[in-house]
Length: 305
Image (cartoon, rainbow, N blue to C red; front, top):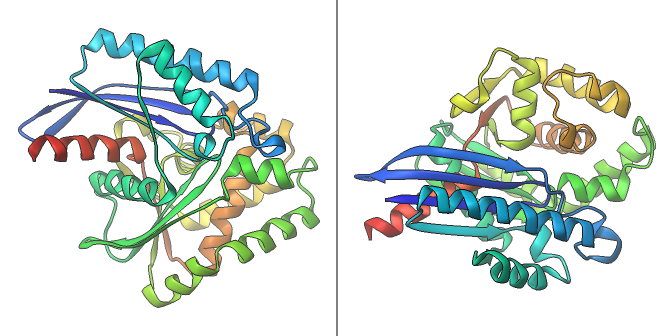
């Protein structure tokens, strides 16, 4: 059976196609497009016309690829960018009209659950861990170990959302950094309270910014061919200081830093720094398997049942 998942993120739309046989999964095709659906979304809480059209064009491309592979089962999920937009339902309806693709808008709890399933598939969970998935609109946190999921929450502190609210200078000023840290402290109290009791030692970053950290720090690492990798914490902190202190132009010169993340990586780094410090996490791991892999795992589970 051929199955597929579409993840409509606030910044990037992802398509993944797989074939299943006896419960095993083989990836046939992966693609993503930097749609930037959440561009300027904090101004009027709307998907702006240009982003609306980019989203439609991307999903038309994805539909053509799905037809090419003759998919048996598809699930398309939309996260913070669509669920928080006042015209999100209009976008969903237009997609259905144009392509026939039906989109499920999932809440933050469902999003965290799917991220957990994706990261679990990667094999990255070893001991008490905190999974973090930094999206454009929201960031999901999951406390877990090899035996299962203990706690999950989604917070509206995605990189694009923070950038639109706080990124007022180039490089970002110390005063604005302080405002971001104060905002994170105000927002993440529930996370910190649970985390102090749980005692996780490892931070597992789900794809996104963590793939960027790994690609910059380990240029010989083939991200597309691995499920998980360790990111040296000392090397990460050195990179983090460089990213936060640099200008937009300076960041464009950093190898393996893709254009979509040149500015948002500053926000992602500040979130990562805050969580590492506040919870005194000892090591960092990358899982290249994320929400879209979780959707595939869910489809396989439904197939078994």
